[in-house]
Length: 173
Image 1: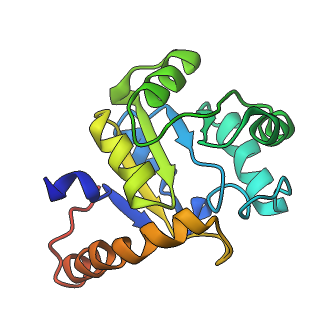
Image 2: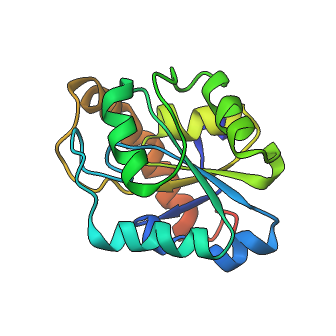
């Protein structure tokens, strides 16, 4: 049961994702959370280094799609500026939004990685959908009140995850 809460890898930000290693695992596409993964919470502003990362992954042949529980207006604005598709009101951690993103990108689940900053939405949903999951640290401390509540529960999972990493018991990719 708890294995569904653990990502395959844990990094500081999307900029630290080991693209070459993922390519070797035949990962061809990324499903990305919006708030505190791609942008700060409730912001449409994309940091320059994040924008450059998206340009680079597309040049390297990776596909990307934003998957968010937000409404369409905000998700659309960010997706258009990055020139990538999106799925809004995804109801994460339900699997339907993940499958829709996979279909939009025309890849298989085995070729897809989920990138997000929350365990109980991004990692849980991605694992339930059978996808490779990547947990990133949140870009900013500001976030939705409901997220703050789930962060208190995430604390215990993250503590256990860090213990596994320190003990060398967390799988390397």
